[in-house]
Length: 100
Length: 397
Image 1 (cartoon, rainbow over the protein chains, first blue to last red):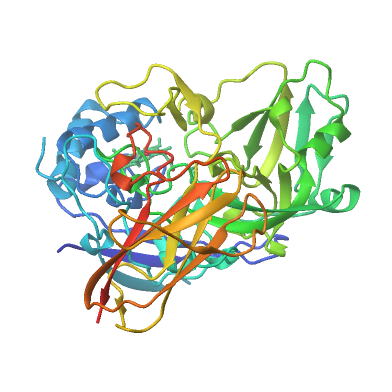
Image 2 (cartoon, rainbow over the protein chains, first blue to last red):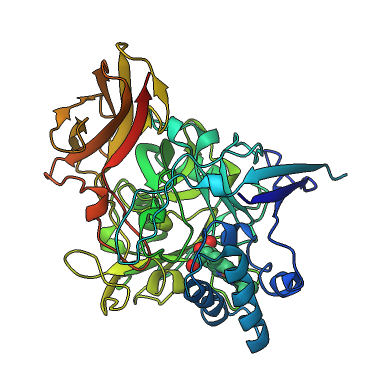
């Protein structure tokens, strides 16, 4: 059974004339750390947390490849060809279900 | 100063039901997901899928009452940039386009210058229970807690449009909120409605269950479209743009669409050519008590409780099966708060045999539509509209 570590940071409170005090916690969804985590860091953190990745559960390599392509082609994430491959490998290695 | 806390959660334990089916074959949605010891503003501890954008799911236990408490109500945003400070003196909804008079309405103006109306309605994400679809479909893998029911108070959208004065050839309205994408190329989460399809129950709400709408549910103003899936219920509503022609928006035209055929279904390797936007909800029910894997006492009263709803036809009956769906008995229905609201059902039994006991619940609406078995649900690529018969298995001891 694998554990993930969440790190909670309470962000500074924003004031203004908001009638209620809004403090949005920032939770770090830790993903597996290896030499390729940099590729994940530079490509997959801009628009959403890693929670989106962990939420998917274990999936096939084709599934993860399609996700990476969708991020690039549909949501305009600037992912280069090399990172596209590494990110897919990384996702399949740690969040794969063994199926291609 | 930053306070740091470390949480260890077991990710594998988050998914209670697993299946490895290759063919398109629906299973039961995720259940018994971990509630994390993290509280978001105005919320209690809930199932957390993401903090940015915030995605919070309501655990099963809350679905025993017609009204879901505000602090347990699910949260779903699409864009990571959400204004966290709202100055009500300068916040307004802009109504423009094909209107006689452009309007800038503050929350106070909505409260003071319009008739206030209330509607109790179920808010449900189109992808609620998505985790049931196999093969896995695109999108957040929700259990069944991306829904809730609340009493909303606000102003009829029609009244607002009337005040602005629609021009003769006004046909559509686009609705936009204040949340934004990080990268400018990503479109905002805009929605579009056909003017002659706007009902009297469609309101711009400023209150939820007698309080200000919680920040994470769209404070200070949220569009409420009873009967429709919540992807159209724009949060932090700030812009109403009236047009002659249908505008193409990503989240209307590409995402949140379902096959436009009789079964609203398709095959993974043969996707439907014609699609349509998600609109009305189908009939569904959900057991709030007991929970899966719970232990219950033999020869003691067990009161099953849950909620049922549809798009506004109203619930005719909820039936309970204790033999895997072979025979069904009627549950007792509580009063109907509104035809769009959760209808509470209860069923009493006294289990006499020790061991596993499976409890299933099925809702039937006034049109005679009833829920299919989970395995009968047909696949669609977005994993929308799952409404399989719910089932919990308890152990009688």
